[in-house]
Length: 165
Ligand code: HEC
Image (spheres, protein in one colour):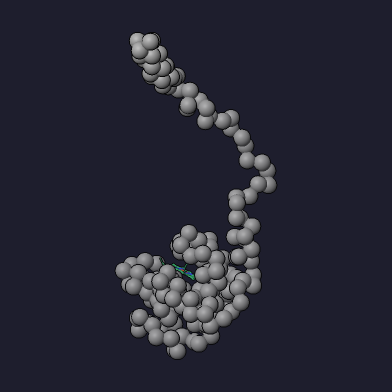
């Protein structure tokens, strides 16, 4: 009786082992292979419409908090080249990077906030896009802060360099 039980349990153990050892090593890989399914026409990545909506003019309401956020983000991301005053005299330029135009040039003064948002999103000429570092709401905040700088005038803002616009 005891012998029979021992044989039976050995048989069970053996069954356990053989279950894993005999498994076809490539079976699990095959199981996750799927046929290539082309992306259907008109498909958009998840969240794309919310992203587009966040970038659409007129953008978030202009509040003191938004402007303050814009100033903080501008100083972090834009002033290295454009200078804290927007004259295009940031420290990166003093180390040899192509100088951006002053924000007080007529052409740049004429830019709408939405156009500045576009420049941040896509870059322009030698300026890289900042879409991966500056989320849409912050792009509007920065754009409004740039307009605020321009409205105050080049003389009102204290720059890092002594260059005049
Ligand atoms: C690495 C340096 C650099 C940084 C950082 C930078 N820019 Fe620029 N920016 C440039 C240069 C250079 C140009 C001129 C591009 C050209 O016309 O070739 C420029 C041009 C611009 C213009 C003028 C576009 C036009 O129509 O002429 C705006 C507006 C602008 N930048 C906004 C920003 C904002 C806002 C940020 C921060 C999010 C920023 N830039 C960060 C270098 C920089």
